[in-house]
Image (tube, rainbow, N blue to C red):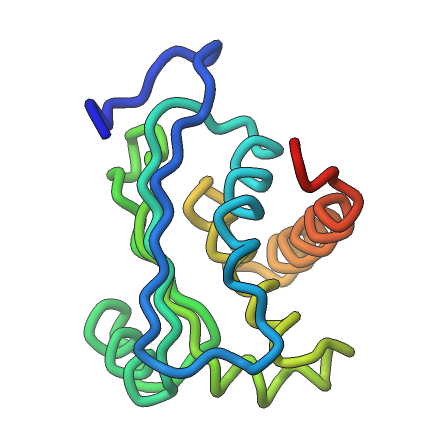
Amino acid sequence: MGDATPQSAGERLQLEFDIALESPPPPDLNLDAWPQLARFVLNEEGQHGAWVVAAALVDDERIRALHRDFMGIDTATDVITFPAAGPDEPPTGGDIAISVERAAAQAPDFGFSPADETTFLLVHGLLHLCGWDDATRDDRQRMLDRGRALLDRFAKFPADS
C-alpha cells in the first residue's frame, strides 16, 4: 500500500478497507457496498491521503469486553472506534467494531432494518475516525443527523463514481 503518512490536502484519498466477520451479519446486509460507502463518507468529510480502516462485526459479549477494557464501561454498546492517529495528529483511519446484536435490537427504534442500522453504525464509526465526537446531547444529534444525510446522499450516488 505504501506510506500511510497523511498527505497534503490536495491529494486524493487512498483507502484500504477490510471487513472481519466475528459474528454473522444480518441476512440482507450488502457488505460489498461498504468499501464504496467508506470512501464516499471519507471524501465527503474532506479526508485525504492514505487511510486504513478495518470494520469488525461482533456480538454483544465481544463489544462489551472492548468497551470495558478500553473505556472502563462494562456494558455492551452499538459501535466503538479505535483511531489509528493520536489526538493531535491528522486522522488516517482505524478500527471500527459494530455489535450486530445491538444493531438488531435498536433498529426498530430508529425505523431501520437490522442491516440498515448496521450500515448506519459503520457511517457513525467512520465519522468518529474523522474526529466527530458525540459526548454531549447536541454533538450526538449533529453526528446522527450527519450520518443520516450521508446515507441519503450515498443512496443517490452513482454506483460507478
